[in-house]
Amino acid sequence: MPTDHRELWVPTGTLLRWAISNSWVTIELGDKTFRASGHILEGAEYDEFADRVRGHNQLLAGYQAQTTHPIPLVVLTLGDEV
Image 1 (cartoon, rainbow, N blue to C red):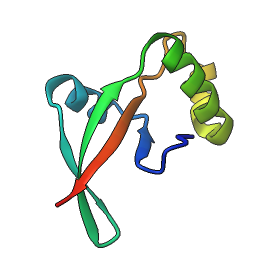
Image 2 (image 1 turned 90 degrees about the vertical axis):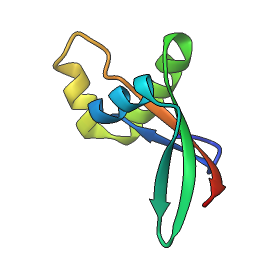
Image 3 (image 1 turned 90 degrees about the horizontal axis):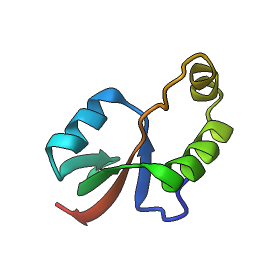
Image 4 (image 1 turned 180 degrees about the vertical axis):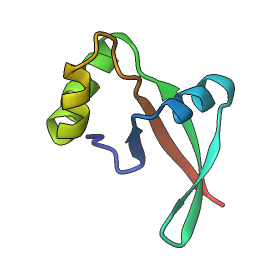
């Protein structure tokens, strides 16, 4: 899991397509709205983060065990409140 409380991990194909084509999004957390930027994890950064995520998410770990390709992970970094 992220150590910085302003980062979120999101393993979704829709978000992956967004991260490839855009550089920001707005996120609502409770009654607050923030701008956020995202990047797709790759290489050693992916390996380390994916191990931690799968350790906390057994559903994702089970899915990963059934496929030969890595499940894309996008990290969102929250910016200023809007």
